[in-house]
Image 1: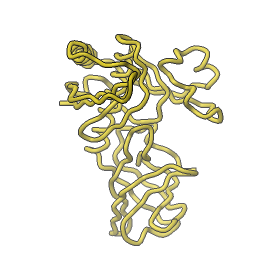
Image 2 (image 1 turned 120 degrees about the vertical axis):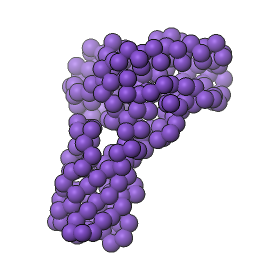
Image 3 (image 1 turned 180 degrees about the vertical axis):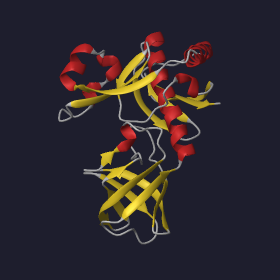
Length: 234
């Protein structure tokens, strides 16, 4: 199983690894900083390099292990490679993912609106929540609360907890552990100081002051009791 370096070393940009397996145009490494697509967060892209050769990593997926799709003839099994992630893309995902967590907390605190889905990109994001319809005044309030909390400079941290302990001590409306398969017994918790703790395997910034200014750009009604909010970070 590939060691997921991105879970802890979220600010690292380069790593060395050994090719464990080649499957067509996909490469399995013994360790990786490349985040695989999942949880509403797109995969990392970047390059692998070895012996003056370079391969573009165009897609990363996690199945039984983590597969890196590369262009051209892939490196051979057993080769030592250096991986470099596209840091600008990754950092944008970290900002938007952290903003999504903070927004989910604001919507739950202010409107008892639970998050039902989300999707992040490098230049925008959206979040689905259980709420009939927000007014323009409520949008203004959400933006104000979000930017106040961002400017507070709240610490963001992540750590592992035993599932039984997490289920017995943390707020289930926030952690949403029930959405994870029962086979997962170690839960990665992402915590925003004072405001939120939730189960998440994504990458995040270390402080809310890295997020930037939050701005709602639109909405879609997703049924009689669900709204989709679109936002950007300036």
